[in-house]
Amino acid sequence: MSNRLNSTPNDLRAFWMPFTANRQYKKEPRLFVGAKDMHYTTHDGRQVLDGTAGLWCVNAGHCRPLITEAIREQAGELDYAPAFQLGHPKAFELANRLIDLAPDNMAHVLYTNSGSESVETALKVALAYQRVKGQGSRTRLIGRERGYHGVNFGGISVGGIVSNRKMFGTLLTGVDHLPHTHQPAKNAFTKGIPEHGGDLADELERIVTLHDASTIAAVIVEPVSGSTGVLIPPKGYLQRLREICTKHGILLIFDEVITGFGRLGAPFAAQYFDVKPDIMVTAKGLTNGVIPMGAVFVTAEIHDAFMQGPEHMIEFFHGYTYSGNPIASAAALGTLDTYKEEGLLTRASEIASYWEEKLHSLRDCPNVIDIRNLGLIGAIELKPIDGEPTKRAFNAFLNAYNDGLLIRTTGDIIALSPPLIITHEQIDELFDKLRKVLMNNI
Image (cartoon, rainbow, N blue to C red; front, side, top):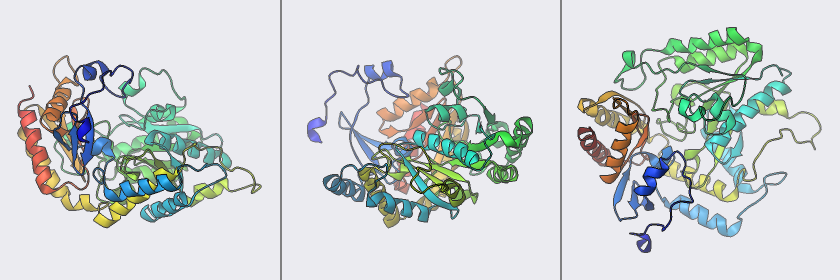
């Protein structure tokens, strides 16, 4: 690594960076050249504490040996195998391991390459399932305001973040949205699950009345909305969504791209909240962010509905060139081994109270108007600068980076989701640095 320190590519122009202020970045580039456990190493040799698990994905910490070795061995043994009409052992081994971790109603897995592709897959499964069940009129998809479900057409359509939608026109038709659950007037500075807002789930009944249940295929929500700024579901909210969907024959999809693989202190949010969806969308923590991969879980009822007709016929016309890629599968197995060996899928439950205490200790900092948390996720909402929305949080991001801390911002909200290996001492360091940033963030 040493030969890469203090080096910067001589031309940054060709790469159009995702979700980035490209012009600002290329004037003052921030480059990582190494990582280990809880820290990144920058191109100028500094250590940066990872307060965001990369991008919500490095749940086991960076460059973990079991994952690294699994990838190395697989790359030298079998680099690629076609996923259509052929297979390789690790894809099947991984699927069985995943089902063993999942809620007990989940029985089958489809592989993808990202959270966005997992969402697209889940939506297509839902639509196709209704057709094979003889309910082809069920074509409507219901998302939620402020929801984030990736950047493909289906995901943006059911998503509800305005800035992600406004450039792209009408997108998919036949989509409606539930109201979001963020009620700062009633729930500000809540520790854990908010008391108020569970009745917002009843808006689904209004939407059913408006469109008729016979036209609705599925509802998709994040159990905890992450990318919009960590919105925690109110008490009883997810349970009520489940009841309404069951009542009207509507599939319930949980987008667990962020909450999956231990973020809340259980393997999946469905288990944490004790609510069973019909389809579950995952990615990110599946491979610890090392290699792109996603997995969509479905019930036996959904899977078996497609297993009709002649056995030589393809049952579901969907898939990707890299579905269940051998090296990605090896990375995922190494990740699951790491989670198991170190108890990481439940570790958040052990340190959540300490995390909560330190997070809420920032309540007295200037311009902090809300703090919220669940498991090992936290958000600090800042008062926007008049006429310059998002700038206060962006300044905090830059100042934190310069002080050796990686945070994530969305709008004027700071989102935190460190690797699950974080220690009490590192939590102290994280919030000491963040206090300094907030106290000086005018």
